[in-house]
Length: 442
Image (cartoon, rainbow, N blue to C red; front, top):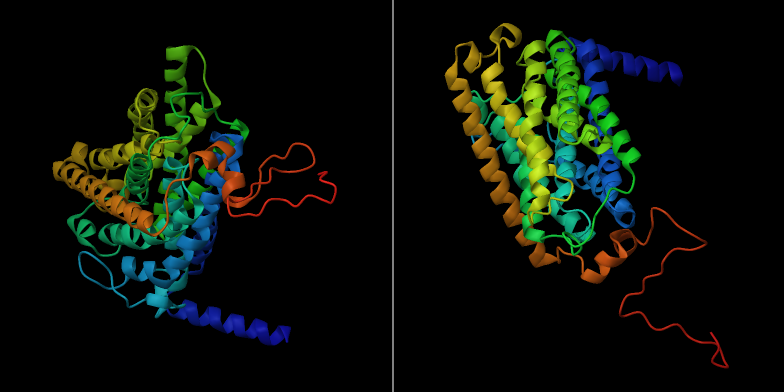
């Protein structure tokens, strides 16, 4: 039996290689896909540590939910809409239900693996946007919204940039998701925060992170996974993957250093949450540029990208905008910064595709700006309409009582941290009162 299985697998491998699949590229992409998938649980820790303890599980569950609801939607329909043969605006239904997605070559890797790799991007993007809506959104509404958003907002934008759509045809550079992932998620989180409104305690009492070590752990795992996110976007294991890999090391290091110096100059102290945020900002900013700029330019990009996000995050708490976990500041603004800096710093000698403004091609910056504008407009409009549609079908916002008790208990019937021998018991208004034993004593 074992010999038969071995021969079958060996024969399949030989057939795949004969059809143009490269073994080294496939091995790297298998690892990269796993690394990108890890980023979503990592994000759960990053976000979960930043909220109050009564909402820790609910916040983490938002990311874990994307693994299933967005992942299934991607396999059944989203991949086809994004990467199926279509026109400039949308793919087709050619690959719906994974039709025609098998072990044949897609570039140097199996088509099925390419689909899975792209699916992990859809999952993390949907998980990212939830940070703007934590501590107040009902979980059933979130599940419906994420399912629709992955199909109707993420997939079309992915097609426009990567799937043969009009932005890619114009020459927009987005190596691993500056527009498709980070600007998209940042704008969606901003719209979500505005539609839902501020948390009931926002501006009236301090809302502090309950577990900063969780956030640091999440940042570390995100950086680790990001090597697959950016390096894997080369879709091979060659020189381009090496360039993206090294730039993913250098840019966040420069952002972290700059952020720490800004903190020291402003307050004399460097905060752990600040450095964790700086890592994410640097990773976001280098994402569109990872395979298009030199390592020295990556250091410059990382350092420069710290400034707009840092000062926005200082300003935002003075407003009524309750983007709870600063998704727009960290992902939206850093994504915009990175996309525009790609248009400045891209070098054809490194990427073989295009030069940027500083290397003799001013038009590239204009194309990048157009792509940014399209991503902002489409994400904002699509997210707004889907939130309104979701609210028609099921209420978006938790009640003030549910917010007060915490969404862990009211949405999931669980607590992250249990004190004593039992958890809080929450009965619905329709639940019958507890019966008293004979004699009237409880």
